[in-house]
Image (cartoon, rainbow, N blue to C red; front, top):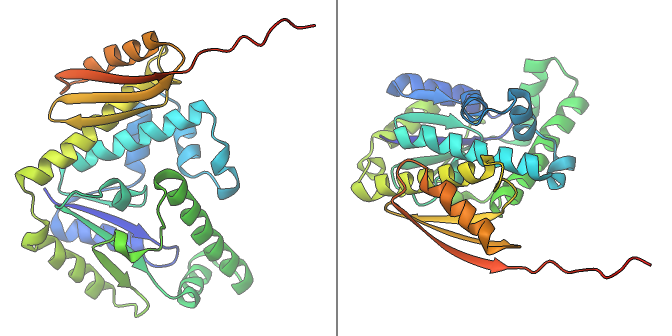
Length: 274
């Protein structure tokens, strides 16, 4: 049931290592499948989900309500795969989604900038200046995405269980290190860790259901889960809107009961227009 969540820098070989680890462990390897799952389950255009997932840094702080909902759908899709276990993911914020899940091995794969630039030059047939700009631009964009989504520093090693420097091009060695870590008792599933990931997944499914419903789709609501109990907390213009969100939440499989805490903001009449 172990989950391997890999965050990688461009040119670090992270995708290749993730695929090799999945093959060695006979785990499922997912990347774009998360986006396809989100589009299929929530019945939204695949190209729009991909656009949100791959959006460039300069646009990340300009999400409208539609794109905010798509991010929620991607999160729910990630947890749907994580809940099954025996899976390797690369990218999509996996290590940050799985904070507090003890059977999740969170890995960061890095390498010196000059080595990453060289690899990108060779792989994409680019000159050094173009490859350098691409690598540094990717680093800046990813740092901004993780800060936007989680309020965390992407580069901080405290967020990972294992940080690998692949500057030595020892690909079998890097794969073997991760495989050995996965098999260590430290990363085996426990009843508590299983309950943790199930709770995170259920909360994400509730958020997605609320974001998908035509009545509640624009509500920004916090969701917490304990067992099958779901607690909703949000700011609304009318208590009836939170009641509608609760009704949606109750229909999500696995939810036993729902409680709500709403802060009502009265609509202000601007006065007559002169």
